[in-house]
Image 1: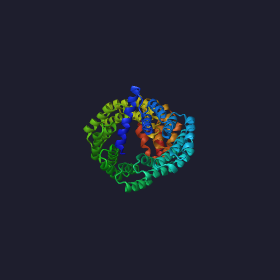
Image 2 (image 1 turned 120 degrees about the vertical axis):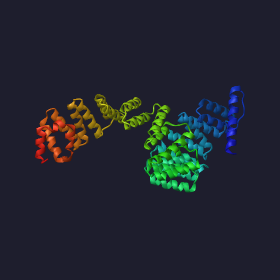
Image 3 (image 1 turned 90 degrees about the vertical axis):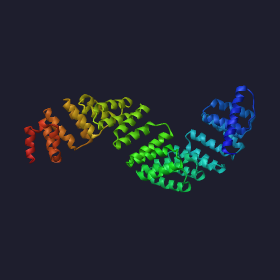
Image 4 (image 1 turned 120 degrees about the horizontal axis):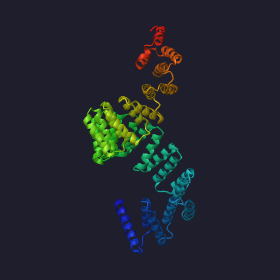
Length: 464
């Protein structure tokens, strides 16, 4: 029986069953029809209808092993594991070579986190099954639950040896390779798989992903090209190809690929955003802006789009607009250190020093411990006249970045501004000894301090 005919018969059975429920008439179904009806309702989440079908099925076919196994499956689904196990033991006594008994035992063990026992039951099922691929796939999943990626991978490969069209197993094999950081090994496996299945668009797509992970973008484009040729409607392959072309600075081709994805499906904010970035890289500011605005229209809650507009206006030196857009991004994600840092930078450009100080402080609170953040933060505090606070920030920075000239020369100037001459001189001697060529930092940051006698006399002692 072909697949289309099977689907038609299943549809007729469902219609007939639902008609029976509405009219309260009792129709006869064979046991396999009942199994299909029950499993359909379970798969679609209509458990009450599944239970009704099971009850009627068992009334018409009380000795059906298949229906009893479906009953077990339902019991497992409802976590009634003891009841399911008792019923399985009865079925095992009747049909000790029925692989489905071992499969359901495995499901019970898996639910109880007894994955080793689940695998043992599945290995027993292998002795009696005509569908080894499915069993190997289930064994692979159990090993995944145990975080044994190598054995999981081995069993998914065995599954594919039995059924080369099991794309779920193929995805799982590649997942294992990825998790184990075995990109080169994944490429070798996929090459072998493609040699046997040259028209597997999924395999070509996964091969492209491996090359992309290794930053071999030329090869990635080559692989994604084959996936697109085999299946012109393969959205993921067009998308990944576009990303690879971007990495190769082939922005016009990347735009064309992103546009294909929008022809295949509704425009996504991701594709619109990437097109905007490509146009900006090409120097086409007008088109870039159009696509950035399209992105936020498509998804107003996409903070990355607001940040793209922020950075666009920073590059245009339009800091007022940049500030407007970074505030939009912060309204969506106000715990993002990078957004707060950008807010602080923009505020500093606009001479909004109090706002800038808040931004640098928030960036630090949310994990930004980069040297530049500490330096800018202390510089803003200095401008605000909060010199002791600026010193404390630089001391914190010094614990993370010891022997850093940018920190030390700032500390020299700050200590002198609060009349801590002894500390400043000790730091100055150390700085001139170790970072002589960076003395311009003191000159640039504190020109009035630079001219003081104490500084000039110390400089003379270093033959400057």
